[in-house]
Image (tube, rainbow, N blue to C red; front, side):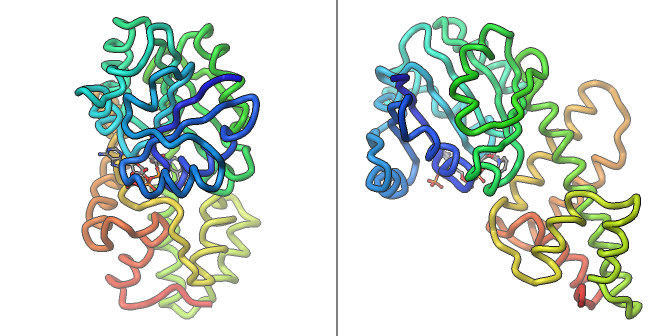
Length: 297
Ligand code: NDP
């Protein structure tokens, strides 16, 4: 049995951890809000750890899935921190959609303890996590990926080594920029069409058989906007964080990226207007309010 410590039972962390709560894994979990970890433990039989250090103690693999790399780094230190419990030689997999610079810093700190770090952000949403079909974007060396593979295969279908530490984060951020750009552009388009009296579902049907289609038009808007269901599965706040990472990454590499930067700025406005709990697809509501018109039928 491989002993796994999982920290961060949020919207995506919980369905990922569920795959690790059965053989050949032996799972212990920690969550900032302890009640969530207790409920998970009661449902699955996973051991509930009292602190990050307690979770890491005796684990072969430590997995984190937190909002940003900042929270991951903040769990390392202190008497209750991960470094107080982790053994030399352990594998540390960070499934957070993090930022490359902080991941590299964390990897450097862990390597002083012979702990191998990999950034392993995922894509595929909560449903992909439930089905165990996530795409996993790995930043590590090949040997670390091969060590991690049995764990990643428990919840991932497409597992790709993107390059050294930080590369997984970078690919994920670019993917998220595309997601944000598509959501923003389709929102503008469908609100305009609705205001002009064209049916949005008819327009989506046309777009989905045409060259402008995307996951946003084919799945997200069809299932969530047309129905006005707006399930909360992935926070707008997290998408804004991701697109900001993509803009920062472009800047660090001296690539002019006005579109990515603009959408990062617009999503920051949307986050401020719609709040920390809004789902990413609710972005359309901001454009609807500016236009005085909802996407309709
Ligand atoms: P949630 O907001 O649902 O959960 C965040 C988790 O992090 C919770 O367990 C929360 O604990 C914990 N947390 C927050 N702040 C801290 C802190 N300061 N110290 C310790 N723990 C903390 O986020 P998601 O699960 O949706 O996202 C997690 C990561 O996965 C993000 O990087 C996101 O971008 C990425 N992601 C999310 C997807 C999705 O569909 N939801 C898809 C792909 C990637 P508590 O319970 O106490 O709040």
